[in-house]
Length: 193
Image (cartoon, rainbow, N blue to C red; front, side, top):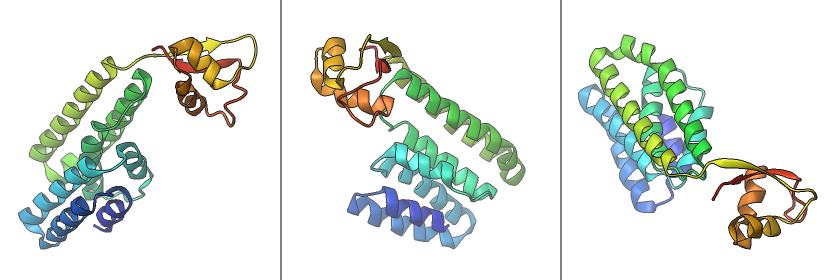
């Protein structure tokens, strides 16, 4: 399970959390029921301890391991991380929910075949709970709107006009992937509030 150690090193920045998780990860090698329990516990706690949950989820999506044990661990980690992610908008939360649901749907069949109905029921419940929590988070987020101006303006001016706060110009630059804040496109995306 080297992927666990890879992701621990890259995404858990708290030294104490890292040490505790590494110790628990060593117990995976025991095998059997104790090893399986240690594996699932470490996967969950990895998702909970990640400094940047969104970056951890991106790393999980890029992993190439295809075995069913890996897929189960990835889903557990993903569920624990996604509910901690900070979504800027409702659309971002809905997109994260859709990605998790698609990944889970693809993995349910192999998980059921390999581990049986009890494990399938457990992972379906875990994913379902995560999806419900993301939905609750999405309901509290602002929707994204399209803003159009007649000419290119600095991001801080647009932010002042939209929000009364010029410091939110950086948010507009990031959301629209603009290379310079001085000349924003005439049509941009912004949060409604």
